[in-house]
Figure 1: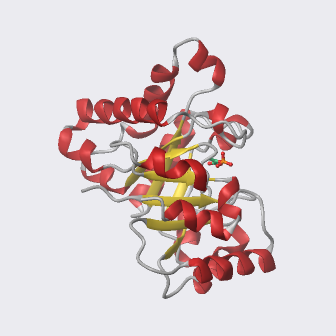
Figure 2 (figure 1 turned 90 degrees about the horizontal axis):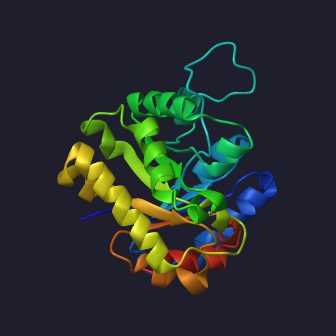
Figure 3 (figure 1 turned 90 degrees about the vertical axis):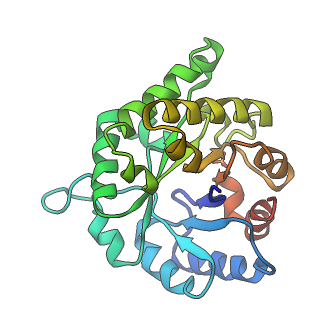
Length: 250
Ligand code: PEP
């Protein structure tokens, strides 16, 4: 069986008091058993506070980004070792905002992923097409290319540390969601692509999250699709009751 995951990407929102407040609110909303793992990704400066505030809860604190380098003259960067030293065991890599705004390339993402995996981290690896690519019918090619170039240097065993997040760029922060059928179609395509390279055993085990305007109103229908194993949630993760309502949509 695959692990279901709901992960909140807080992006560049929330200072320290807001981070603490949001975690306190999420904790209050947590009652009953969750049928998924729950992750939150606050900004780097607040990871340690978030980690401490989340001890003895089901909340895993994850990072939004990390360097491919281990240490040294890389001003402004944060290494995997640093993240691990504050309790972080999972990092989001390849978010479309990193790719588009910060021009992170497939090669850089492959390097970051390798560094993280070598250090024993789990990676939520994001992929997704722009609207023009979907309109031109190139969405499958775009997404499989991102996966191939970012992840196919890993061996079979290393794939145990990979979580995929399919996030069509046209659905991120726009209020526009891929239909459950569109999400399922792409997730099945991704799983087959992984199976063709690594075999069914690996492909069947990898969790593939959907991201793009997931809300309490649409989460259940999307998560019900057989190849959708949860969500990477932006905007709605900043509201504790919405976030937990999404997590309870399984
Ligand atoms: C995201 O940033 O990963 C995301 C999916 O954002 P939103 O849920 O706001 O579309």
